[in-house]
Every structure is written in structure tokens, then in C-alpha cells.
Length: 289
Image (cartoon, rainbow, N blue to C red):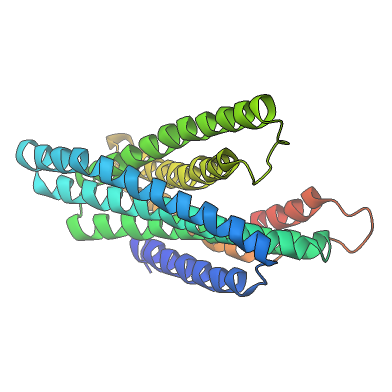
């Protein structure tokens, strides 16, 4: 099996694993009516923000797409569009999972730290595996279709564009909502911090999901993509005889598959003094081995 096929297969496996984890998370109890009411408000706000952000970005994406097509070539432009769409999808998956997992983790925490950690980790792993799978499928498909590295640069640029706007825009929104909630709640009305009676608190929680989940997902997707592409560009250098172009794809594929196996070792001990980081260290160790 060549490296491109391996990367594509690993990406499909990662996506399938992410879908399975999502079903596990969504089957968990959602909590009481009050928890669900707050969660629905956060979901609605997060969805509205993301839709507005992508609508604002769309005209700029179209302009850049046409510019690349006319002044560079349409293969690079097509790869750029693929990078934009997959990065946007990674951000969407990251946020939609997080806003649905929050109340389920809170409900699981009533039973103890162990079930809460297990569910929270699965919720985070959905995003991690989904974006890793999308990155591997995207890079391997673009390279397999065109057989050249130039279109991959367009793919990386598309991923970086969405990542930039998602991270910066989400960060600004998060901080604005945070400051607004503090000013209105604690200074003007005397409402305790993070009290859901303050509408700005809902906006603050929306901002946390937008910046730290959607923005982070797009950011990690972009970092993973451009790291692979940079390695492929180095592998094509004359010093290496151009024989190591697909080696970064193989490394990334093996890393993702190892991470899937390692995720099964992230389990909290049963003792009263069990520490969360020890569970993660076990997963990291299993992945490395």
C-alpha cells in the first residue's frame, strides 16, 4: 500500500471513529429541563454566529477563488476551495459537538468524576478525529488527483483563511461577551457571575464555544494540513532526490491510527485520589508505543 492510499484509508477510519464517538456522546442523558433550556440557547446562539461568519466570508472566498483561477491556475483554485470547505466543516463539527456534549458531561458528573471524564474525552475526541480525518482525506485526495505539490499550497491557504477568521473573530466575540456579562451582571445589576438570568452570560458561553471549539478546530485542522504540506515540499527538494514527497503522509496516517488506539487507554483509576492527567498520560504512552 502506497503512502497516499494509506493516508486516505487512515482518514476514513478516523472519520468513522469520530462518527461512532458522536453517537456515543449524543446517546448520553442530557440532564434536567433547566440544563437543556440553557443548552438550547447556547446552541442557537452558536449556530447563528457561525452562519453569520461564514456568510460574511463567502464573498472574499469567491474573489480569491476567481483570482487564483485566472492568475495562477484552476487546479490550485479548486484545491483552495476544498481547503476552505473542509476547514469550515472542521469548525462546524467542533462547535456542534461541544454545545451538545456540555450538559451531558454535567449530568454524567453527578455520578462521579470517572463517567464525566470518559464522556468529556469522547466529546473532544470527536472533534480531534474528525479534523484529522478530514485533513488526511483532503491532502491525499488533492495530491492523488493532480499529482503535483502546487495545488496543495492552495489547499493549505484555504484552510489557513478560515482558521484565521474563526480564531480571531471568535476571540473578539468571546472577550466582548465576557466583558459585557461582567459589567452588566456584577456592576449594574448585582447578578452573580455566570448566572443564566443574565443574557450576556449566554452570549459569553456562545463565545467560549465559538472561539475555543470552532476556532480551535479550524486552527488545529490548518496546522495539521500545513505541517503535512510543508513536509511534502521538503521531501521534494533536490537534496533528497524527490523521493520522500509522500513520507509525511505516511507519518501522519500512522500517527492518527496510533492515536485512535491510544484513546482506548484514557481511563481514570478507581481510587479516591485518581488524577485526570494520569489517565491522559496512559493514553499518550500507549500511542507512543
